[in-house]
Length: 113
Image (cartoon, rainbow, N blue to C red; front, top):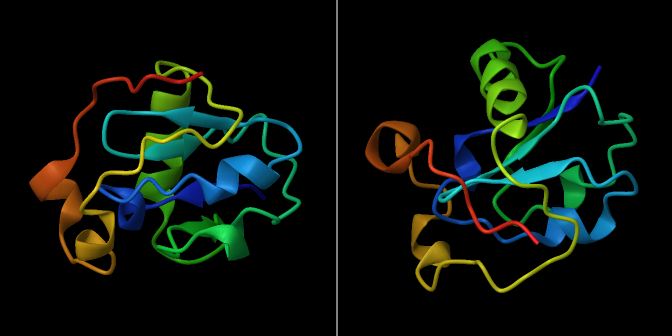
């Protein structure tokens, strides 16, 4: 098992999860974070820290596309190991919004640290 970041993170990117990750397995895209499933140790400490409720265990139904997206982009985007001020100013407005992947996702890398 591993944890994955879903589209609930898109345009939110709060980064509270990054602060608590003991193995630094988060990677930053322009509009969201992802978890490297090969590095995640399944500890679960990140899940309750996410204000957008975007982190879920990959054992939940329907997360195959998110597991693939996390695996793909964690190999392309820079690692982020600490919470930095990358949260969009309008993040709270996008929290809970439906269809964010189609509206806002980009494959562009974020800044990382």
